[in-house]
Length: 565
Image 1 (cartoon, rainbow, N blue to C red):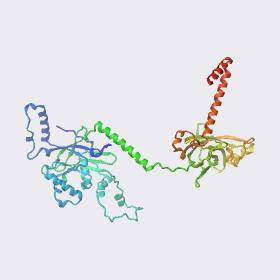
Image 2 (cartoon, one colour):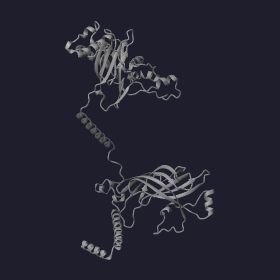
Image 3 (cartoon, one colour):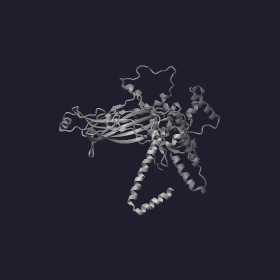
Image 4 (spheres, rainbow, N blue to C red):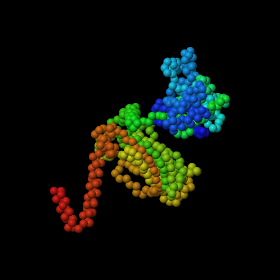
């Protein structure tokens, strides 16, 4: 009749989306004695030999003992209060009730005495609100845990300090207490101060399922209370059970202290009601409705009244990044850039229109030397639309930049000039701009650049594109010597905002350019596109007619004339 025991008494962590109030645990406590083992053996024989009649198992029990003295099985819910014999005797006396919770327990105990009594005998619970939960001596908790394990371990310092954390939290502060205004931070803490202050306190709710394993007739003594199961949970659906459910395995073994050292079997099972398919579907629909309502609530907090620019003004916001530069002659590169605003464009007074990156050392990737800057920048500009004019077209802002190099001797050299035009469409853009630098012919300039540093520079950076001071019709750069250098890569995230975007009549034109949605230059842009398409089609038709024989061309022209007629 030797029994095998479950020695895996570690805690198990479960996660559930269901409310923890639906948790149900069946706890079975059975005393292991020679009489109980014989009774169990005879019960098995009775089931196999039912035709011989039932055997009176009552005669096998000890004199003065009942079936509840040796075994008990109970289903316990989350935070369900089951009174012990000690509590039944304690809360009967109204004078011993000091707190509102004690007076509530006094009322419940009186109701139980008037009724059939409590349904439990040895198994009882300590809920999260009980002061016994936080006042349980640590040695008792640790000793009860050791009874379920095969090897004993000494408690750690943190475990000892955690035993009194909940007790301190339950204490009520007086109304006149306040936080001291001085010495909030202790710069020279002592060892005692560190031990008494650095204690972790979590917000988990705890419930203990206890067992009164006293001999029959001696129930109600605190020294005979033993911890059976500890259940902890937080507000995020995490449930910690120690020890874990048996799940068909052997029961746990509990050995009491004292002279007799009685042995008890402990079985823990999860008996939560399984949800029906209709309930699951109803719960999923409820969660969906909850998420929709929460989304609507967040939208109501944000609102739809965003800050809009005035009528006829376009707000252009660019969050950009100078990603990398490659293909330049020297190392240790940095970039100086600034923004130029054309006519009808403006910016905020505190807006910085220029910037300088950090110095970056190039890295060899394949056959290229690449310098990764990852330098962020942002520009915000405003455009005021005017009446549509046939002679002038709107101009976008331009970012002019200059790539320079700096060596250990503090010699800098101009590596290249370039420009970047603001994208006409919002969204993300990755643009690679190629650069060039002025070239002075002759060997002396090359030696000066190598040994002394310095090189020809542009007096006006806008000369890279079209100078702002140029008023003529044709710009000639004849005789200006340049040299192609490297390239710079930009990542641009552009946002455009205007009142015209919200207009219901303009919703169908969201895919067009910004100025088309502002109501200007739409017809001109559409006509140019159509004319270019017609010109391409006419050229292709002429090339096709030239490649065909004459008689076939004549027949084709007749067919075209008839179709046009």
